[in-house]
Image (cartoon, rainbow, N blue to C red; front, side, top):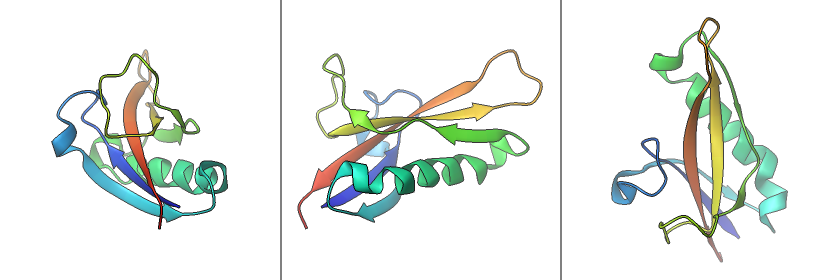
Length: 101
């Protein structure tokens, strides 16, 4: 299976056609590529100039929640930026498409 990772502009349901391609991973299942996808999101956030000096992490992929309007993605992830001196963390949505290859 091919898993394609996209970064949204804050909300996975908005501006879907403008989401940015981040990475492509291949594996037998979403579980087989989970660690690679987490690393892809963490690296994407860490390399962003606006988050320089911040710690970054990501949550594991989950099936897209039924309350989401977006139909393009089969899975969603959340990246987390942890600023050193801020009152709260910054959360960013990522979408994942799954296709047979």
